[in-house]
Image (cartoon, rainbow over all chains, first blue to last red; front, side, top):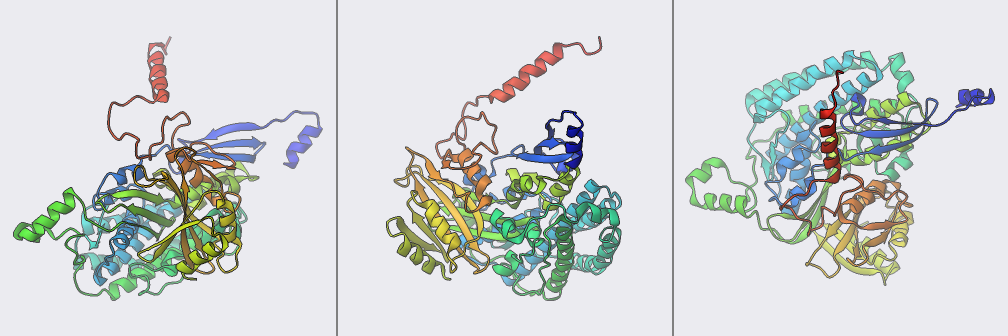
Length: 400
Length: 177
């Protein structure tokens, strides 16, 4: 700002410049449009425009049965569809009043943490790429590829998995999957060391992120921020600890917390989370209990295929479930789960029929995008890029 | 604090505003009148025993033909200090779909309220920037209302007609001469 005042004193005229950044800008991580009012290189005002990817997921959900709406959740945050599925099935299970068997809960915890690693690794790669470091991005793709291969081995799909199902998981896991996953997680900490060597103490990285986009803990809570974006500001709110679901109360892990609430602390938090996710997966594999992977609730969850073909009773249940949907009591349920981006909440209003009367998705990316004007104000244009990266948004989830 | 006790506390403090309390699957929803929603929110936010500092979610709901008052605005609130949650619901009638905005208490509900306006047409009085958020500015109707048609003859959105028109004109233009 000082430079501009100097120039103005010399008799030159300066005026505000409004530019539109996006929606097809490579650094906006999708179709996010920011209108920036600039004075020199400083951002006076930043106005985000979202909605380019709006597909009406909430309306679609109201017109499908609870079991049939599951694939919609894949398409929210397409980077980590496994976590969205886990969030969705947990909310529906809570509404139905059923619980998944122990083995299914451990498997879900395990695959959700794999999803967390794959999402965070994409975030790390693209965030540092935006700021100018190309190398970590290429390595990050290697790790993500390994996890996607494991997903393919698990259920045949790589991106939109729909593997967790209401009442458990779609199929049991194989020994080959466990062996390969174990191999991956034994190797993963050393890969993390590689990334940290490249980035954490890098002088350029620190100059671009330390003290950028600062938000205090109290303010972050008031904004409704969650996930790594909140924990970078020193608040240890994590749904996995505050309201444990699946097997998170059965495994040990720490919640990394930052101090200053700037881009650098949020980076440290997410890197720490990847190491913790690795720890959780290891415990899940080691303590995996035996047993069935689908709940025994024939009127609420789909029966196994082989029984449908052999047994009349199961065939009837399956027919009713597919055509009419399950019959459940009237009521409403909110359930939040910790996805890589923050707290993903599903809110269902049931009117007693097989379809949700109202399905609401509380998307963390939506709230994180709304805080952008606050983070960008007064900073440089180059810091806008750093701020978009640090809040970790996916526009598919933001626009729903 | 247990959610039912929180509901009692709201009832004690605002007996005239309080309408209903319901528990389902361990979650408590409190229904209130819309007139004093800001005062109730302020009380929930400031009271040291309640201290709802984290606005989880705000959304609309449409009970067309199911309830006397058609709309509801649903607030999910959480206290990180005390680890408790409450669902607050305010009834909004069809004739005058408006309610006071709580952005002054929780700044994070800003976009949620805009979305409820966008999808249900509920006006949040005192909101700093009440515009459509997910849909284009000139969109007609409110898609999440229950009487919004799902199927039927579709009318092209005027913005798209404009784009088609422009592309036709560009085709006629000869670029290389």
